[in-house]
Amino acid sequence: MLLIKNGRVVDPVTETDEVLDVLIEDGRIVKVENNLDYESEKASSSCDMGGMEEELRVIDASGLVVAPGLMDAHVHFRDPGFTYKEDIITGAAAAAKGGFTTVVCMANTKPVVDNVDTLKYVLEKGMTTGIHVLSAAAVTKGLGGSEMVDMETLAKAGAAGFTDDGIPIMDEKLLAVAMKEAKRLNLPISLHEEDPVFIDAPGVHKGKVSEEIGYGGASRLAEDIMVARDCALALDTGASVCIQHISSGNAVEYVRTAKRLGANVHAEATPHHFTLTDTAVLEYGTLARMNPPVRTEEDRIKIIEGLKDGTIDMIVTDHAPHSEEEKARPMASAPSGITGLETSLGLGIKSLVEPGHLTLMQLMACMSKNPMEFYGMKPVSITGGAPADLVIFGEKDKWTVEGFVSKASNSPFKGWELPGKVHYTICGGKIVYSAD
Ligand code: DOR
Ligand code: ZN
Image (cartoon, rainbow, N blue to C red; front, side, top):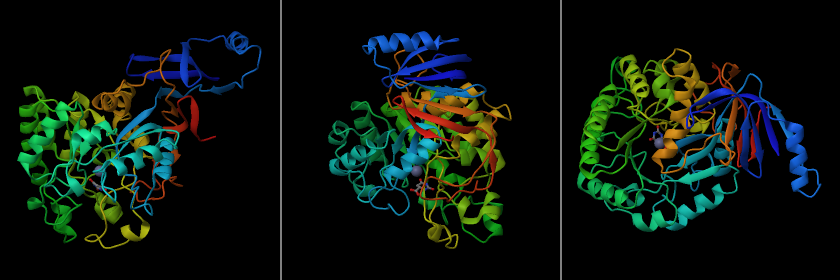
């Protein structure tokens, strides 16, 4: 039994925001009440157990927020194939430290998750971690863009959805067929939107900064043209489509229009895209190289507006661990991406809640309820009978970004002071991370 006392319960599912006690037993929330009578709960529980005293733990959450466990619908755990960067165990530990109880792994492993054996490997290893590790499967074999995977077989084997993330799907005919198949299987399909034709060099926005450092850069048009195309395809096919890690203000506008037209289209924003602009490259070098790149202040503001009006419904990290040696290479040969799970909640509060763009409730919806609904799951909620997946954090509790649990530390946010320190992450009633 676990009793969380006096926490501010912020639950976007029930739209609760009040100080309550939460009682957990056998992996489930059994009661959520004001001033729960702990002694009598204990007595009745030991009666149930035939007089045996069950271990009972109390967490004093006074001054802390108690929210549904976070979900990151976009992580790269690099397992199998690139476990020198991260593996499923260390990735899940980084997730738990960040307040996440559910993650969706991307398919760009080696081998690629385009077959049942690799998918099963990920899911089975994920089951040993203490959190819920789901995996997407690829859309095309080997992420090659030309031959579709057997989506039905992968769906039956437990794929959460489909994506060639990391690589755009250039064949629109193939994509239309894949969208229809995803719809038939009732699973979402997610898209990395960067047309290589408009990328002179990846990872840095093509503009003043790229010119200044003498780097080719990736233009906004590379994203815009694909998002416009895929909004049209989503509208036509009716599939549940996600525009991954949206980076261009124009692309946000395309998604907004497509939604208005009735497309079942969704979008993700990452903490780096709503926190940084392309000038970050001047300060952080390759640690600010990511695909798609962080762009201008105008784009950043449009992403925030998209989050405010629900055009962008999910906040994801695109957790992309790389080794120190890889990120020490020159800009042109360093890999793209940053490790994100441990800084996401803090950046969400710092960049969105503190300036008044989103309420904490809205942030929690973007980080748990909405991604869960996108994946067809019942969103976790802090109510009696629900699975006990929770995060306990201090909204204003400052902490310094250091000492990563991830194998990687490729983050431009190293040394930043962030709010939102996670105190506990609880998954299935078990404490999977504790700061104390
Ligand atoms: O920057 C990125 N890195 N963007 C992606 O889409 C893929 C990711 C990776 O796998 O490293
Ligand atoms: Zn990604």
